Figure 1: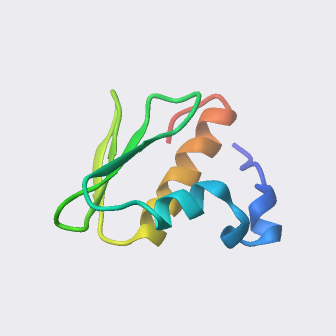
Figure 2: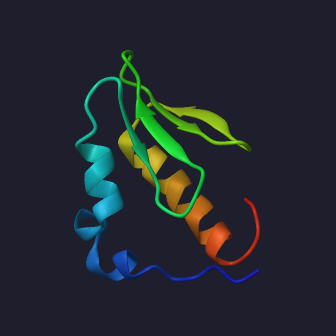
Length: 82
C-alpha cells in the first residue's frame, strides 16, 4: 500500500492544526478528531491516550502521539487500518 504524502511533511508539523492541538492539550483535556471515532486525551499523569472502538494506546510524548495519529489518519484515508 502506498502511503499518502501529507502536506505538513513539506510545510512542517508546526503548521499542522492537529500537531498544535496536541501540543496545547491541558491535563485531563480531550480532543476528538473530526470524521473519525478517535479521541485523544492528556491524562493527569501527562501521558497521551488514543481511544476508539479499535484502539486504546498510551504515549509518553506528544511527538510519538502525533506520529501514530498521522499514521492512523493516513490508513483511514487510504481505506485500511494500521
